[in-house]
Image 1: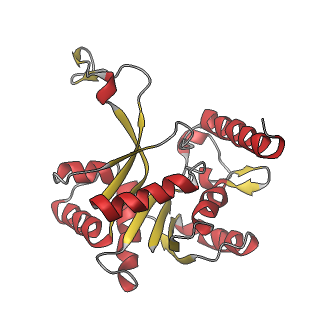
Image 2: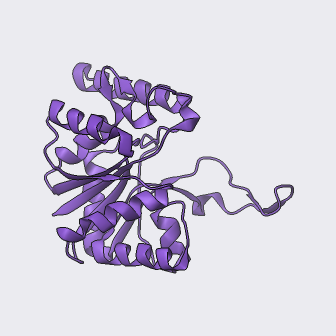
Length: 238
Protein backbone atom coordinates (compact mmCIF):
# COMPACT_ATOMS: atom_id res chain seq x y z
CA UNK A 1 0.00 0.00 0.00
CA UNK A 2 1.04 3.62 -0.47
CA UNK A 3 0.73 7.01 1.19
CA UNK A 4 -0.09 10.22 -0.68
CA UNK A 5 1.71 13.34 0.56
CA UNK A 6 -0.27 16.32 -0.70
CA UNK A 7 1.37 19.71 -0.26
CA UNK A 8 -1.02 22.62 -0.23
CA UNK A 9 0.96 25.24 1.64
CA UNK A 10 1.17 27.89 -1.06
CA UNK A 11 -0.44 31.31 -0.69
CA UNK A 12 -1.28 31.67 -4.38
CA UNK A 13 0.06 35.19 -4.94
CA UNK A 14 -0.07 34.74 -8.72
CA UNK A 15 -3.80 33.93 -8.59
CA UNK A 16 -4.63 37.53 -7.58
CA UNK A 17 -7.01 36.09 -5.00
CA UNK A 18 -7.02 38.12 -1.81
CA UNK A 19 -9.68 36.15 0.03
CA UNK A 20 -8.44 32.56 -0.29
CA UNK A 21 -5.29 30.61 -1.13
CA UNK A 22 -5.60 28.99 -4.57
CA UNK A 23 -6.08 25.47 -3.18
CA UNK A 24 -9.26 26.62 -1.42
CA UNK A 25 -10.79 28.41 -4.41
CA UNK A 26 -14.01 26.72 -5.50
CA UNK A 27 -15.19 25.31 -8.81
CA UNK A 28 -18.88 24.37 -8.93
CA UNK A 29 -19.00 24.90 -5.17
CA UNK A 30 -16.17 22.49 -4.34
CA UNK A 31 -12.63 23.57 -3.35
CA UNK A 32 -9.75 22.61 -5.66
CA UNK A 33 -7.97 20.75 -2.84
CA UNK A 34 -10.98 18.42 -2.47
CA UNK A 35 -10.98 17.59 -6.19
CA UNK A 36 -7.33 16.58 -5.76
CA UNK A 37 -7.82 14.60 -2.57
CA UNK A 38 -10.76 12.63 -3.96
CA UNK A 39 -8.53 10.92 -6.53
CA UNK A 40 -6.37 9.50 -3.75
CA UNK A 41 -9.30 8.86 -1.40
CA UNK A 42 -10.99 6.60 -3.96
CA UNK A 43 -7.85 4.76 -5.13
CA UNK A 44 -7.65 1.23 -3.75
CA UNK A 45 -3.85 1.24 -3.37
CA UNK A 46 -3.67 4.49 -1.39
CA UNK A 47 -3.91 3.64 2.29
CA UNK A 48 -3.16 6.99 3.92
CA UNK A 49 -3.01 10.67 3.01
CA UNK A 50 -0.92 13.37 4.67
CA UNK A 51 -1.67 17.00 3.78
CA UNK A 52 0.72 19.90 4.28
CA UNK A 53 -1.40 23.03 4.71
CA UNK A 54 -1.10 26.70 5.54
CA UNK A 55 -1.27 26.94 9.32
CA UNK A 56 -4.17 29.41 9.40
CA UNK A 57 -6.22 27.22 7.04
CA UNK A 58 -5.88 23.89 8.85
CA UNK A 59 -9.19 24.31 10.68
CA UNK A 60 -10.92 25.10 7.36
CA UNK A 61 -9.39 22.02 5.77
CA UNK A 62 -10.54 19.78 8.62
CA UNK A 63 -14.08 20.99 8.11
CA UNK A 64 -13.90 20.33 4.38
CA UNK A 65 -12.60 16.79 4.92
CA UNK A 66 -15.59 16.05 7.13
CA UNK A 67 -18.03 17.71 4.74
CA UNK A 68 -16.84 15.77 1.69
CA UNK A 69 -16.22 12.43 3.42
CA UNK A 70 -12.43 12.33 2.97
CA UNK A 71 -11.45 9.63 5.48
CA UNK A 72 -7.89 8.64 4.51
CA UNK A 73 -6.25 11.86 5.73
CA UNK A 74 -4.51 10.83 8.94
CA UNK A 75 -2.46 13.96 9.53
CA UNK A 76 -2.42 17.64 8.54
CA UNK A 77 1.00 19.26 8.85
CA UNK A 78 1.76 23.01 8.89
CA UNK A 79 3.57 24.18 5.77
CA UNK A 80 7.03 25.71 5.64
CA UNK A 81 8.44 28.88 4.11
CA UNK A 82 8.98 27.21 0.72
CA UNK A 83 7.60 24.22 -1.16
CA UNK A 84 10.81 22.37 -0.33
CA UNK A 85 10.26 23.01 3.38
CA UNK A 86 6.64 21.93 3.16
CA UNK A 87 7.54 18.59 1.58
CA UNK A 88 10.21 18.01 4.22
CA UNK A 89 7.70 18.79 6.99
CA UNK A 90 5.29 16.25 5.53
CA UNK A 91 7.94 13.55 5.17
CA UNK A 92 9.19 14.15 8.69
CA UNK A 93 5.64 13.80 10.05
CA UNK A 94 5.35 10.39 8.38
CA UNK A 95 8.11 8.86 10.53
CA UNK A 96 5.61 7.67 13.14
CA UNK A 97 3.74 5.36 10.78
CA UNK A 98 6.01 4.72 7.77
CA UNK A 99 8.77 2.20 7.11
CA UNK A 100 11.67 2.75 4.72
CA UNK A 101 10.16 0.48 2.06
CA UNK A 102 6.76 2.17 2.03
CA UNK A 103 5.76 4.03 -1.12
CA UNK A 104 5.00 7.75 -0.95
CA UNK A 105 3.46 9.77 -3.80
CA UNK A 106 4.27 13.48 -3.50
CA UNK A 107 1.62 15.56 -5.26
CA UNK A 108 0.50 19.19 -5.60
CA UNK A 109 -2.77 20.07 -3.92
CA UNK A 110 -3.53 22.31 -6.91
CA UNK A 111 -3.09 19.58 -9.52
CA UNK A 112 -6.69 18.26 -9.46
CA UNK A 113 -6.87 16.46 -12.83
CA UNK A 114 -4.64 13.55 -11.86
CA UNK A 115 -6.14 10.19 -12.88
CA UNK A 116 -6.51 6.80 -11.29
CA UNK A 117 -4.31 5.35 -14.03
CA UNK A 118 -1.48 7.79 -13.32
CA UNK A 119 -1.54 6.97 -9.61
CA UNK A 120 -1.44 3.26 -10.42
CA UNK A 121 1.44 3.71 -12.87
CA UNK A 122 3.45 5.65 -10.27
CA UNK A 123 3.01 2.94 -7.65
CA UNK A 124 3.95 0.21 -10.12
CA UNK A 125 7.05 2.12 -11.24
CA UNK A 126 8.28 2.53 -7.67
CA UNK A 127 7.79 -1.20 -7.09
CA UNK A 128 9.77 -2.03 -10.25
CA UNK A 129 12.32 0.80 -10.49
CA UNK A 130 12.50 2.46 -7.05
CA UNK A 131 10.94 5.80 -8.01
CA UNK A 132 8.72 7.55 -10.55
CA UNK A 133 8.85 11.10 -11.87
CA UNK A 134 5.70 12.09 -13.75
CA UNK A 135 6.55 14.11 -16.85
CA UNK A 136 4.89 15.59 -19.92
CA UNK A 137 6.46 15.73 -23.36
CA UNK A 138 7.21 19.28 -24.49
CA UNK A 139 5.27 20.46 -27.51
CA UNK A 140 7.56 23.33 -28.52
CA UNK A 141 11.31 23.79 -28.75
CA UNK A 142 13.16 24.43 -25.51
CA UNK A 143 15.90 27.07 -25.42
CA UNK A 144 18.65 27.08 -22.80
CA UNK A 145 20.03 30.51 -21.85
CA UNK A 146 22.71 31.08 -19.21
CA UNK A 147 23.05 34.88 -19.09
CA UNK A 148 19.46 35.89 -19.86
CA UNK A 149 20.51 37.39 -23.18
CA UNK A 150 21.91 34.81 -25.59
CA UNK A 151 20.78 31.30 -26.52
CA UNK A 152 23.35 28.81 -25.26
CA UNK A 153 21.68 25.64 -26.54
CA UNK A 154 18.56 24.33 -28.24
CA UNK A 155 18.24 20.72 -27.03
CA UNK A 156 16.55 18.09 -29.18
CA UNK A 157 12.83 18.41 -28.52
CA UNK A 158 12.22 14.65 -28.45
CA UNK A 159 14.52 14.45 -25.42
CA UNK A 160 12.81 17.21 -23.44
CA UNK A 161 10.05 16.74 -20.86
CA UNK A 162 8.34 18.88 -18.22
CA UNK A 163 8.49 17.55 -14.66
CA UNK A 164 5.04 17.25 -13.11
CA UNK A 165 3.48 15.30 -10.23
CA UNK A 166 3.10 12.92 -8.59
CA UNK A 167 6.76 12.23 -7.89
CA UNK A 168 6.94 8.91 -6.09
CA UNK A 169 9.58 7.11 -4.03
CA UNK A 170 10.42 4.61 -1.35
CA UNK A 171 9.88 6.56 1.84
CA UNK A 172 13.29 5.93 3.39
CA UNK A 173 15.20 7.05 0.29
CA UNK A 174 13.39 10.33 -0.29
CA UNK A 175 13.42 11.24 3.42
CA UNK A 176 17.18 10.63 3.46
CA UNK A 177 17.67 13.01 0.54
CA UNK A 178 15.60 15.76 2.16
CA UNK A 179 17.55 15.34 5.39
CA UNK A 180 20.81 15.64 3.44
CA UNK A 181 19.49 18.81 1.83
CA UNK A 182 18.60 20.21 5.27
CA UNK A 183 22.14 19.53 6.49
CA UNK A 184 23.63 21.04 3.32
CA UNK A 185 21.24 24.05 3.46
CA UNK A 186 19.94 23.32 -0.03
CA UNK A 187 16.45 24.31 -1.20
CA UNK A 188 15.03 22.69 -4.33
CA UNK A 189 12.19 23.34 -6.77
CA UNK A 190 10.73 19.85 -6.36
CA UNK A 191 11.76 16.29 -5.52
CA UNK A 192 13.10 15.56 -9.01
CA UNK A 193 15.40 18.59 -8.68
CA UNK A 194 16.60 17.23 -5.34
CA UNK A 195 17.29 13.80 -6.85
CA UNK A 196 19.24 15.43 -9.66
CA UNK A 197 21.45 17.35 -7.21
CA UNK A 198 22.37 14.12 -5.41
CA UNK A 199 22.67 12.10 -8.65
CA UNK A 200 19.87 9.64 -7.95
CA UNK A 201 18.71 7.79 -11.11
CA UNK A 202 15.08 8.61 -11.91
CA UNK A 203 12.45 6.65 -13.86
CA UNK A 204 9.83 8.64 -15.81
CA UNK A 205 6.11 8.11 -16.21
CA UNK A 206 4.56 10.10 -19.08
CA UNK A 207 1.40 11.99 -18.17
CA UNK A 208 -1.31 13.44 -20.36
CA UNK A 209 -1.25 17.23 -20.92
CA UNK A 210 -4.37 17.57 -18.76
CA UNK A 211 -2.42 17.09 -15.52
CA UNK A 212 -2.14 20.85 -15.05
CA UNK A 213 -1.08 22.79 -11.98
CA UNK A 214 -3.33 25.73 -11.09
CA UNK A 215 -0.91 28.60 -10.62
CA UNK A 216 -2.50 31.68 -12.19
CA UNK A 217 -6.04 32.73 -13.19
CA UNK A 218 -5.77 31.27 -16.70
CA UNK A 219 -5.02 27.83 -15.21
CA UNK A 220 -8.24 27.98 -13.19
CA UNK A 221 -10.33 28.53 -16.30
CA UNK A 222 -8.47 25.78 -18.18
CA UNK A 223 -9.20 23.43 -15.27
CA UNK A 224 -12.88 24.31 -15.36
CA UNK A 225 -13.09 23.80 -19.12
CA UNK A 226 -11.28 20.45 -19.00
CA UNK A 227 -13.34 19.22 -16.06
CA UNK A 228 -16.63 20.16 -17.71
CA UNK A 229 -15.52 18.53 -20.97
CA UNK A 230 -14.69 15.29 -19.14
CA UNK A 231 -18.00 15.40 -17.28
CA UNK A 232 -19.84 15.87 -20.58
CA UNK A 233 -18.03 12.92 -22.13
CA UNK A 234 -18.93 10.75 -19.15
CA UNK A 235 -22.60 11.75 -19.14
CA UNK A 236 -23.37 12.15 -22.81
CA UNK A 237 -20.73 9.91 -24.39
CA UNK A 238 -19.21 12.65 -26.55
